[in-house]
Length: 191
Ligand code: AMP
Image (cartoon, rainbow, N blue to C red; front, side, top):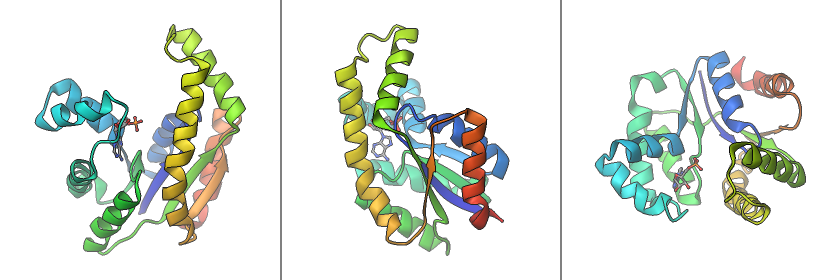
């Protein structure tokens, strides 16, 4: 059983790799962004609350997010392991995830960090924006999003680095090649 996180910058192919890892390891992939978006679409009370923040590009408050994750991790499909994507994003969320797992007598096994050169990511994201006709995704916006990503993740990665559970994998290259790199990096904990 593997309980893990995936962290990676926009444009690093994190979503694709997350679904591959979840298939290969037979663990459920849980993306807080996806859960929020689904709730916004369905106009659930959680979605209505979360939308206020998501629309402004802000974090949904920890109280809301933590409860949502706590409930999600209690579902039977998460009992055999999980791959969290998009959570924890703050130091408070790191603490809360520790609490949730400690209550179940478990802990996080590994934090997989996908890395990529910012210039490469800017080019990829610009290419994607042009293809999808997203003119709002210009270089300034993309660079701001990347800077924010680095700022946000530093806190979380540092917390887990102290425990020696961060595995860093180069996310640049052929999709299959990156998957193999990840599976190799995970071998020691998933064996
Ligand atoms: P994402 O797709 O992971 O970028 O998430 C989309 C949006 O959902 C974010 O911009 C936040 O508003 C919200 N969100 C997702 N995960 C979290 C989290 N762990 N803490 C707070 N807000 C979150």
